[in-house]
Length: 139
Image (tube, rainbow, N blue to C red; front, side):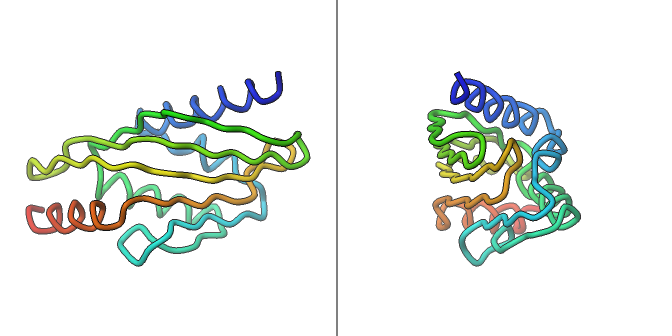
C-alpha cells in the first residue's frame, strides 16, 4: 500500500510540473537535500538549497517552456524511513523557434519520512545540448 501511495505522489508531482507549477516539487524537499543533474550544460550541476532549486526550475521553464513529462515507470523500494524511487520518463515538446525536443529522463530519488533527501537526474546530454543550442540560436 505504501509503495502505491508513493508512486501516485510521484506521478502527481510530475503532473503539476507539466502544468507549470514546480512548487510542489520544491515543497517536497527535506531541509537538507542534494539535487544533481548530471552533465556540464545549462541545467547541469548540484543544488542544495530551496532558493537554488527555484532558480533552477525558472531556468528550466525558460529554456524548455513547451516540454512535458510522460511518466513510463515509477519503481519504489523501502519503507518510509528510507524510500528509494526510480523514474523513467519521456520528455517532449515544442520549444521556441519551432524546435522539437524529445528525450528520455531517468531520475533516482531517496525519501526519508516523506521528504526528498536526494535526487539524481540523467538525460541524454547530446540530445539536450542540441536542443538548448537550437533554442539559443533561434531565441
